[in-house]
Length: 326
Length: 267
Image (cartoon, rainbow over all chains, first blue to last red; front, side, top):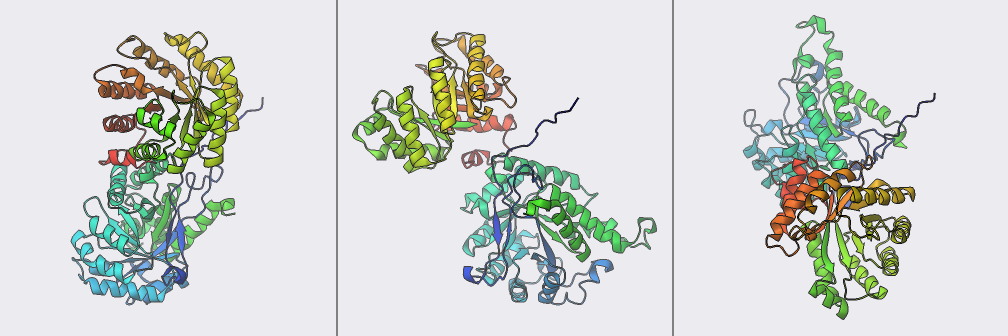
């Protein structure tokens, strides 16, 4: 008896918003390349159900201060350039093929070097001179400090159509106003909670900000540290979006490097934990594996650190896209 | 929930007068107001003001010009419907639309199903026939199944079929409320995925004092039974708030503290 397999294809009613980052000379910026994410009409890589016109992209992380606590297997790739964010970014783009650069303003952190708005703006300008890819600028996570530095940052990058973040439910007005004034896109952060993810988007759009100019950051977690919770939240948001929820139809960004390189599975050397194998392989593998999982639940932008993880994830995206790229 | 705004109907004095005098402004204003209030579709009906296909075409054109909101093209004369749908195609192209409505009578059902196929529309099927409106659950379900079968056979997928169980006035036919709710439950089992189930809401409160309360209580109960579309007064803020809340309780929308705002921004 032949078995008839029922057709289980889903048709969805909505499309994930398309967000384009970077402005070229014709558009009033100086970028040589633009990056578009979103536009999907089905769950990630379900090419048999719908289109995924823009494959997920990789942003590499650059700081405006030399990191103190990066383990050697990571630091060795950047130690020669991290005194200068411009050189660091150049290396990420030219040597490792980063689609975007994510400048983390770690040097402005009040518990660290506590650098001011002008220094933050200088780092942004330096990056814009050094590379042609679009820029993400990620604040310190300290509300007061971020509200102090972002006016200078947003102005320094005026016209470049950057992605600035993050806003939260409790701190959004300043950055929403700046992104409106200087025409940047916005990262809306929520603490692993789909209800708050929706709420932050509503708050921003209530100030007149376009829902099409938002990228959601639903929080990220490393493999082994709550990744499955984040996965579920992202999955639920994406399903609601494809069913028509306009306040969850934004592309999503995952901040992976910072999480993975904070956990012992990536940080511990083989001297400390010999049974776990070589750290030079284990660290990047942990980072790449975390990224693979988020790709499958709808990550549009992945922020990564290790060049080997970047290469592996790029290959995975290529393979998952398969014929979908045509 | 698919909310179909009921206000552009010649039976309302201002709309009736606007149709007679060919004044676009009052009609277009209602089109915009209902759209902002969260209408997914706008019902467009000449009422008793005119039987002229030209007037119907003019009315449809007037609304389509004002807003991108899809229409529910509403009349019970086949000739008018044809003219209206042709105009809709000319002015709105492939914009979605609902044809409102057919009954289970053969003489109406076949031609209207054909029109729904031809114009790529949804079709509301009211569960009555030459014998009139049913008074019990079984007859409602029987006629619903008949409409569904004929429409499906002609190629309409369940998401283009809207079954209307015929809501009757609470004040005069109190026993029917329960029957309508039970019929909705059974409509939802006709197919998987089920057809849409649509109610003409305002009938429930006819001539009653507490109209708003009766409308929103009934609609929420109907939603719980499986109803997912209503022709109603979308300007009734409390009604739309109740719908938005019921959608959350049924886990059809994702909660956020500002969900009432989100509901109105959903289109």
